[in-house]
Image 1 (tube, rainbow, N blue to C red):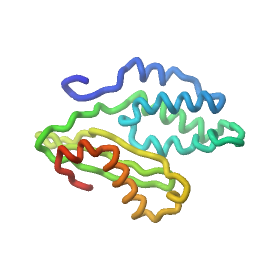
Image 2 (cartoon, one colour; image 1 turned 60 degrees about the vertical axis):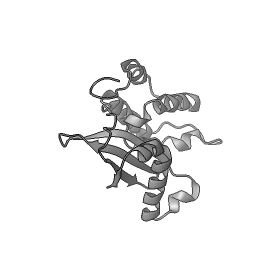
Image 3 (cartoon, rainbow, N blue to C red; image 1 turned 90 degrees about the horizontal axis):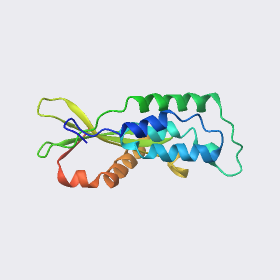
Length: 164
């Protein structure tokens, strides 16, 4: 935490970047657990990580495909350039952006500064479960709104909100 905002501890990102690709489900779970520490800084993390979900299911063989490796490299690149999050400015409205894909829903909470520059405050996302994967797009956006309202309730209570 500093004057410009909130950054991830450089030691934590250095540790994540130095990891080699997971060789088994246990190492993959460990990597995903370490990523959860910085998930608020990574947009669309749940959608990216959905490619790894089948590798963690019981009875499935662990085959590290080219797509898995490309996604792993993409996550490593994102870790190298994480954005600085800003604490919300009291009295100014927040903006909520919603997103939905076939595998995940997410939201970005942002705010315009007094200078008119928009800064991210928080990213949230989660993978879809079971029947949720068959929801129509509008229902997925509603699910994203409900999920964001649950996770970001304290921001919603303290500030006016614009749904974008």
